[in-house]
Length: 281
Image (cartoon, rainbow, N blue to C red; front, side):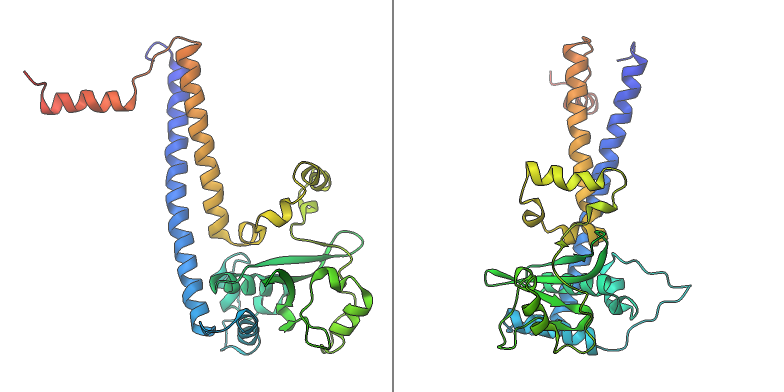
């Protein structure tokens, strides 16, 4: 490649991106492992291992409502809305529906429950409230962490979002919750609010629904969008795979189309080994 400075420079840039993305993957693995270890220890401390799924949900809600004194956010202690250590330890964040739900979902996942966020939208497609769904049996039941409650019918049956779309069911479930806003209805719900993406957001949902109708249900978007460490790990893996693909295609193009043969890494290592060890006689 000595006679092709542009190709050589491009190759160096691609290799730097590969190495940087690999370093990001390793960092992301360590960060996510640390986060999961923190959450596992936290959940073990407040949720008895022998509890059934409903009891685990109740244990988390009791801790959010009546747990030990938390830290108070000040100007000198900035917090992250997507960092589990902050959402679990700062009082202000546990009083807001979005971050309280994030805290609940993280603890539920750490205790072995499948859980995700559910956004309630108004007529303008703006989020008016955030609750959680937990898979119990084969039903995704509704939990409201900011009001520390599991939604139940008067007969004690747990309810799903589809059941809460019925006004009579919604009224029967929520009338026993003190000061619960009757505007938090379920006629329009999403797991991912794509409208926040500038320009293309309002068209992206229709496109995804067309090519992959179950895209919202197939992936737990809550962890990807609301946990910094998991988002970092996922993004770095995607970048690393993309960089490897670009490296492979660029090498193929140089050798097949431009006739530029590069020295392979294993060949360079073999030559260095021969120099250091010496060729056999």
